[in-house]
Amino acid sequence: MLSEIVRNLVLNMRVPCFAVVQHIKRHNILLKRELGEGAFGKVFLAECYNLSPDQEKILVAVKTLKEASESGRADFHREAELLTNLQHEHIVKFYGVCVESDPLIMVFEYMKHGDLNKFLRAHGPDAVLMADGQQSLQVELTQPQMLHIAQQIAAGMVYLASQHFVHRDLATRNCLVGENLLVKIGDFGMSRDVYSTDYYRVGGHTMLPIRWMPPESIMYRRFTTESDVWSLGVVLWEIFTYGKQPWYQLSNNECITQGRVLQRPRTCPKEVYDLMLGCWQREPYMRLNIKEIHNLLQSLAKASPVYLDILVFTHLDMSIYRASICFLKNPNSLQTETSDCCKYASKTMQTFCLTTFFKKVIWFREVYICFSLTILFIEMDKIQT
Image 1 (cartoon, rainbow, N blue to C red):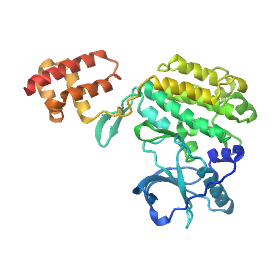
Image 2: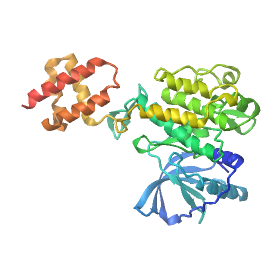
Image 3: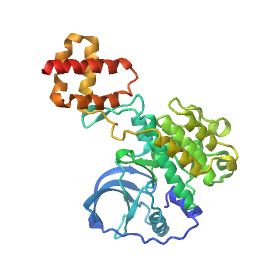
Image 4: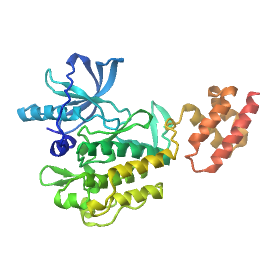
């Protein structure tokens, strides 16, 4: 069965397929664990050998085909041919297929942090997660980081439009996040199962993401590059609300009948919200051009420096944070509480740690924490000297 994103490509791509699909040997693929399951089959994390001349093995995402019928196999090969032609830095890379035996396998690059919607929620203002058995605070994404994410998705959509490709299901759930906040558009066909509430079932099998669809797509099933622009506006709204569902307070039926636009998110700059409004013009021809959107986002992102590595609190950060809170409550307890900090920060490293931690602590809105940290490091210096 063709995944929905590639079914769209079949319907809308007007350029011929020239690339040759790479065939990968079965013995070069070592499955490690299951990542998810969709109507087509399962997706696994795997190690793939001899795929890159620079590395003996690399981590990949492997998609298996559940349906092994004649038509299913034909669709599988057609999808592989089409995916081979999609080559862009912000489109998930397709490596090739393995067809030596059942199940048939497609091999994609592995994006470490999973889908963007989950990533945004994990880095929202209230997210506290457990990582590697130790407490770790997932630091809230900053506005520059959100702009960095947005302009990458827009860049991918500019490329798809240049290939005469209409996506029809652009949403943060269909984007993936890798190292250093690298974001790519990709679809393993799992989103309709994992995010079933995002879709509205029409008839027996058709699932429509109506919260991301413009009026002409809902009423007339008309999908164009302009309808993708509308969806991109909703994706921007998702990014600046840390992955909230559009119109989360309304049912699917209410979303169809209401005629309002989404409100400006609290963290969203006016310039970005104006972009959203430009995407949500009722008449398709009045919407912003996809290249204009990308250029504007790129300009905004360049104007705001991004600290890509500041996403997770280290053990040292947690120790300092706890010590600062204890100091606020009881200054006399400082020497005991900072002993853990001193294990991790030698005197020569204190200036570096303070600078790094201040970059991270700015996401805490309580200004008194920043002030207390200054006092904390002064007292730590006294203790060690």
